[in-house]
Length: 213
Image 1 (tube, helix red, strand yellow):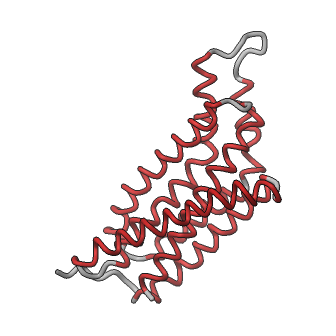
Image 2 (cartoon, rainbow, N blue to C red):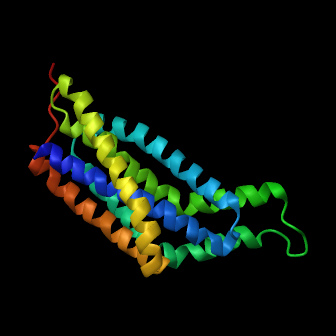
Image 3 (cartoon, rainbow, N blue to C red):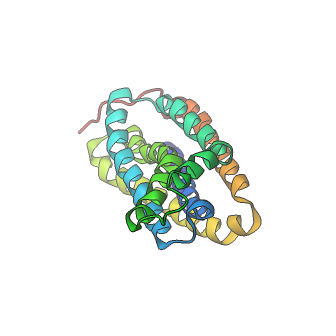
């Protein structure tokens, strides 16, 4: 039960990250065009968010040792994601319009503007979602000899969720849903994870025990 809950949790987290990455790249094209640099920026920003989320998530799990700690973080990320279509258009427009209209945008800013836009819109939710994997490893591993097995399971499930997110968003969601609807649905999924995290301590025995050899 313990491993199943943790594995399902990170699967959905990985799914949400890839939906934001794929749909997000499409979302940025309306302001920055179809440049190759949009994909470079989106991939790079998401990878930075993942790296920081993994590092900080493990430290937070060692300190707080309760799944309920994730609830407010996920709630903020979920609400942020749901509201992307409402508050981000002026931000992205401001990035573009800060350049003089009578001058061509320099090659440097053609590369960096999409990265700045991606950071403002997608860094926060992806960073929070990246926290889930190391946090679940700490919650689910009760003995030192289980750490390797649990780590492999958690990261495998997160990666499978990401694979599902790539194909579902690319082949289904973008074809049949508008980008605004995709962001709102993804935000709602993240809010569901916030609720689940509140219940998870009860399922996992209320708190994390010290790892035993």
